[in-house]
Amino acid sequence: MKLANAMVLDVLRLMGVTSAAAALIVPMATGMTLVLCMLTFRQDRPNAKYVLWPRIDQKSCFKSIVTADIKLVFLGGVFFGDELRTDVAVLESKITELGAENICCVMTTTSCFAPRVPDRLEEVAALCKTRNIPHLVNNAYGVQSSQCMHRVQQAARVGRVDAFVQSADKNFLVPVGGAIVAGFDADLVNRISKTYPGRASSGPTLDLFITLLSLGLHGYQKLLAERKRLFTYLQTALSEVAQRHGERVLQTPHNNISMAMSLTRLSPKNATQLGAMLFTRCVSGTRVVARGEEKEVCGFMFRGFGAHSSEYPCNYLTAAAAIGMTQNDVDTFIKRLDKVLSKCMSSGDTDNSDCRPSLKSESERGECEGKGDMVSSIPPDLENQFKTVSVDEK
Ligand SMILES: *Cc1c(COP(=O)(O)O)cnc(C)c1O
Ligand SMILES: *[C@@H]1O[C@H](CO)[C@@H](O)[C@H](O)[C@H]1NC(C)=O
Ligand SMILES: *[C@@H]1O[C@H](CO)[C@@H](O)[C@H](O)[C@H]1NC(C)=O
Image (cartoon, rainbow, N blue to C red):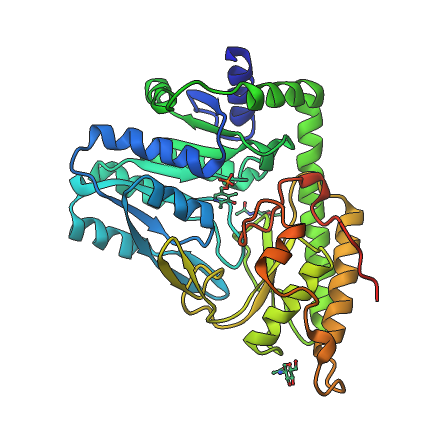
């Protein structure tokens, strides 16, 4: 256990968070590990009942806060061109309004789906430091991005970062079920681990240990370099498809993992259909977000669900370059996307009946779903990012 934790800490440092003091492998997914952190912060802050949260439409992050029985305060983002960025001014005024001592923590996110971009960690960290509020960073699949890791390091340097949490499976190609919590104060990380109720399974630790040993640092760096290359490759290919269909790739230069392509020529309803068509073709690495979609999660209504904003101006689909992906995966994805877009956008097709999904209910759709998570477009089996489970080649 100790050895595996030390190895993981080493990896986090080498990937850019050079001053991390401790890391622990936790046998729970990312969302639950975030809960553990919040519960630990609350032990020191008896009045704290709120978590300030720049909105990210990822169900497990939202559920984690509800599980922790802490009041969630949503913060909308600001648009900057196509990008959706953190609204630091709103965060600051919310802190003043609620009172710093009543706030359990601010929870920011690094890795996220375009057109949202990573939160402005440095500015939030500086604010948390001056107002004396814990800062928790959801770095779910951020280890594979030097940009995300750099942001965590910078934030800790200029301000306050209490803990940052990353998924084991999303970053290290191990089975789902483990996360890594790390921080800059070894005592705090230790306390977080002590909050874990009961005995822990050693499975995730072993998985990670074996994977790191067999990959080696060099092997891991090679995977990361390939991911970076494929990001550019995917971007080029997606731009070409977009152009062919009268659309464009949204300009989100601050997101180095995920990208989005507009679907302005489709109505929201038809865009959703396109998403379902891709889904039935088991293109799991993408997600269509229709403008104005409403969804209930844990009793809360989200407007514009999936878009991280109630008012994103167009429909779009997202695509991501994640670790373990191959060029062949990208090619397959692009080919299928092109085909489906041709079907949906062909104007000669009057009633567009081909644009209807063959599977309708969500439970049926669950078949090719990795984690049962509608928003995450990164499936647990990262090696098969865009893998086809059942090909529908008609
Ligand atoms: C994957 C992910 C999570 C958590 O997912 P788990 O299933 O709990 O591991 C949280 N936030 C983001 C941004 C994610 O991508
Ligand atoms: C994103 O990646 C590009 C290309 O690899 C790089 O030039 C750029 O600096 C990165 N952006 C950030 C914010 O790190
Ligand atoms: C949406 O699809 C329907 C048929 O499925 C079609 O009649 C309609 O014209 C499409 N609308 C748009 C805006 O694409």
